Length: 303
Image (cartoon, rainbow, N blue to C red):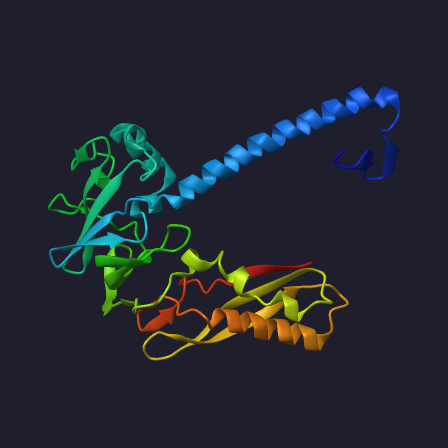
């Protein structure tokens, strides 16, 4: 039965048992050693997963009008699992797996006419012959027609302007959006992106730990405890400068009056306006930090 230990008392769902008797000390310390061991393992796993997510993964390639682009998705993953597993064993994906390419392969596709074809798979070595495993997709000319693909693909070329905090969804200087249905390109459009990096502008990740030093805690002497504020860029001008912020209080002491909540929000806005943040434009829309419009949480500790 799951339990939670607080101090010397072990509270188990359904009953409470005092562990302060001498005979229970050995059991208690065994329990704590076990908890310590589990926490150590979890810490190592979390550290490992953080390092994995921080490493940008190699992208598959798609050739459009003889120009190489980087794909936002792994199209071999859309094969049925039996075929994909057979490819992995035959082409030895496991031999080329590493931190920047955990899947162990990089595929090259090409748009010819309005159809999508698989040219090669590079694993431990480059393969253009797939050992009959993809024969069901070959056309009359022996080309592998990627009819298993039905998706909207983002294909980037040029400089990589932005990468999300988790290392995913890079933004390239020029991107082409392809809508593919059963391997046939039914529509496409191309647009240009840009980054706003004017003199004096700063990246949020470089100053996020300086921001608490700017907050005027002395304006709120009666506030005690933790107030968690959530914020995100709300409006941009035509040049990409942030002109307004969406700020809300996510959590605070119940006794905090409404007028003081508003004053805390105004103070957070004042701190944010001290900085000229770097932003980027994707497909005509300005973004700050991420294209996912994710909110940032800021825990304010009042003493």
